[in-house]
Length: 144
Image (tube, rainbow, N blue to C red; front, side, top):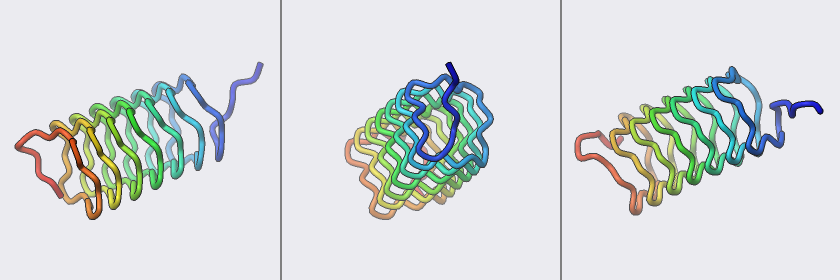
């Protein structure tokens, strides 16, 4: 049986991609729900419109990735590198973004309802129109 290959619209539900090197790949609209992407390298990858519901992405490197309109609800992004990502309109409801690096990220119109943002670095992030209802923050981290 062949393993599904990453690509636009790929069905990678529950895929085991820990530490995978997918930088620059086009995964537009892929189903990565419940996938294990811990420590994966996704720098500059196109993940726009992806379903990443409850994906395990702790310590993943998504620097410069396109996450526009992606569904990351309940995803675990603890300590992930999301510097300069394009995540306008993305859904981070109930996601764990504790200690994540979101410096310079475009989070315009993104949803962070009930998300864990303790210790996340949001320096220079664009948060215009973002929904932060119920999100948990540390008092010390800068907001945009």
